[in-house]
Amino acid sequence: MMRASPARIVLYVISLLVLVYLILPVLIIAPISFSSARFLTFPPPSFSLRWYQQYFSNPAWMQATRVTLTVALLTVVIATPFGVAAAYAISQSKLRIMRLIHMALLLPLVVPIIITAVGIFFVYAKVGLVATMPGLVLANVMLGLPYVVISVLAGLQSFDPAQEMVARSLGMNRLRSFFAVTLPQIKSSVVAGGIFAFISAMDETIVALFISGGQYQPLTKRMFTALRDEIDPTIAAISTLMTAASFMLVLLASARQKRSG
Amino acid sequence: MLALVSPALLVILALIVLPVGWLAWQSIYHDGFTLENYRRVFTEDVYWRSFALTFEISLAVTAIALLLGYPVAYLANSVPKGWSILILSLVVLPFWTSVLVRAYAWLALLQRSGVINQFLRYLDVISEPLALVHNTFGTVVATVHILLPFMVLPLYATMQKIPNDLMQAGASLGASPSLTFMRVFLPLSLPGVLAGCTMVFVLCLGFYITPELLGGGRTVMVSMLVSRNVELYNQFGAASAVAVVLLISVVAIFFIVSRFVSLDRVLGQK
Image 1 (cartoon, one colour):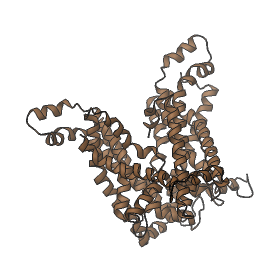
Image 2 (cartoon, one colour):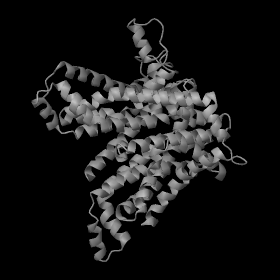
Image 3 (cartoon, helix red, strand yellow):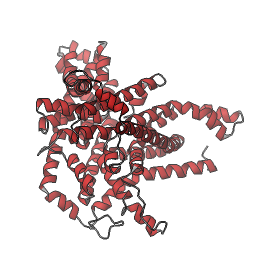
Image 4 (cartoon, helix red, strand yellow):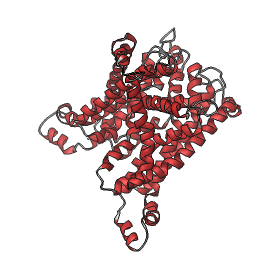
């Protein structure tokens, strides 16, 4: 099967080039962030931590980082129970309308994000939520919900609802039986869904561009503005930290999911 | 049970359904009903050019992603399990890097004093730096990079379901490997091609950050038209009409594709 025919060799070479194209940009950031040069030179003339220093000593970047972490944390705290409740209802109910609701909950993945962003901006402008923390959190809850719903629904697929019936026949009410029987078994997919919601909130840029402002600007909005003006290696340092953070979270989430599967 | 879904549903209704409805309303109502906004979108040159450019770029990106993604998916499907996991991990790795981070990386790679120009000058291939970024080229390179996983994953999923016996049957009937590929494997992989292309094309239609940062202001895609009408010109009606036309295009594409291939297959890959 695995004879190295000419066609096969061409296939290897093309695939290798494509994989290099995919990986190279991810790998290039870290060396730039440790470079001492003000402008991009490659390879870097010498290594230094000046761009990290610049990031950690700049009040504007620090404020933006605090906003990002707060928003991402609050998003998880709100989106996870909402998403778990919805996924549970979708999987248990035989109501016809649930199919429609299920589709509605996945809408944030389908509607082009620029449309969502502008639409939310108009609605927020009417109710005074532009440039506020609650506004930012709410928007990220909406965008994070599909990840929780998808992950928890997948977890519930391998759960046998009869177990909950047994618990209830033994006298537990529905709520207690959920927390005592069901939740421990789908815990991993709940955690994974929460982590994906966190990453989504941490990376979200376009909605923040429209609805955030003043002191409540997340990191991504400040990075976007900075990138439009000039290429400052401080952004390479921030990018490296962000990439490291999301990789660790993804590893955590997939380790969780594997255990549940 | 309805009580359990209602918090999530309320958030979705308030922040997706209501805003989109608002846009639709605003596009036809301003001190009375008007179709002026749509007339402008369909007749004025700026809008028309931007829509045309967006569809051209999306088509180009989809075609390039297919050309690059098919061999990778094919290879991942035809090697032993450990290798295919490695290949697929490399494919989804950039997926988990922020789109902004990747825009920065491409700027660092492609700009006049960037890594690629420096490398080419070092090799003496060029004497003047090439204009690789702040144009359509830079936009396409970075956009394909972001969307390629959306092409490879559905392709791989489809290829995995093609039974190996069929290829062996083809070979045992005397067909050459290339003939078996063309007559058996390729046609059977077409649902994956359709799913991947749809996903990439539709996502590309709404792209904003990449063309804004790598297009250099000349590559005005539809999403930039929307944001400029809001932020620079305060043309809310026009922005809404553009958004509605974009959304209708996306929904129409999903609708047409759903008649050929199950939508779960297209959306389930995210």
